[in-house]
Length: 146
Ligand SMILES: [Zn+2]
Ligand SMILES: [Zn+2]
Image (cartoon, rainbow, N blue to C red; front, side, top):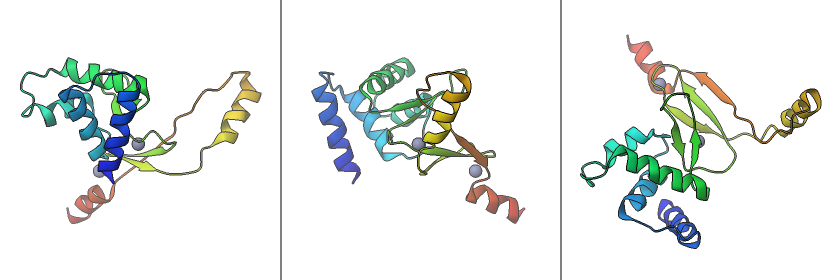
């Protein structure tokens, strides 16, 4: 499954004329295999053994390229703590208040909110973002066993 996704993503990279460097390949593969919405720093730490000469700036640079092609979405949280998501289909996120874990939550897009907002504010709405906060299952278990 993730092999197929990787091959499709690589095809898209090739079609866009972007050079596939080993680092870029590794960043993409890491994102496709992790459903955790990692930060650039986490990706850097996961790959630094494999690419000792790679800097965090290189990771950022690769993420920017992947984002521009539409293979990766950036979820900004102010400062430098953006998280990166290679699931580019419409979905929402559930975030653990305790450990910060982000899990995909599939729900029909709330299109009616967008059109209502347009009517009420006069904005032309381009997108929306919804996040739900709570305590994940493993953090609930930790809380119970204490
Ligand atoms: Zn948690
Ligand atoms: Zn996601």
